[in-house]
Amino acid sequence: NELRLAAREGGEGSAAAAFARQEADALREDNARLMDILYTAEYAAERRAEGEGGDIHNGVAAAEVERLRAQLASANEGRAAVEADFHALMDSVQGLKEQQQMVAGAGGGGGGDAELEQRMSELMRENSALRSNLSGTEEACEGMQRELSRIQMEYNDLAQTLSGTPYDGEEEE
Figure (cartoon, rainbow, N blue to C red):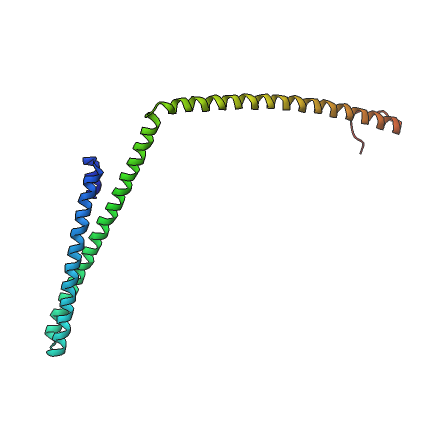
């Protein structure tokens, strides 16, 4: 969380990244130190149990071992949180770099406007051609509809002639 605040306030991703690296290194050192203490305490507890056989010393050593384990777990959680913040910060910095490159590329050379104008012109020509094709297709469909109606009328006239009854437009049941 401190890393995110530092990145927002400072605006400098590299300073926040350096802080995150230092914090992660410090947590790794604390982790290593606590691991050494834990192993030493466990070793001492085993020796006391072997040599003295007393329940009082074993209880004190076990409590110390549990306390050290809790410290180690807390240090590991802190390290994981710092690493997650660091990765989030680096992703954010990368996103900002990509965004800056896109902005610089779009507005930088002025050539982008000419390309956009050319593409717009091409799309307008394509749109015009498609409208023309659509218009031709609609005319062809209307012609086919007229031809179909004519054929249907001829068929009905032929059917009336063959049956000897006049066709009134309604089907018989």
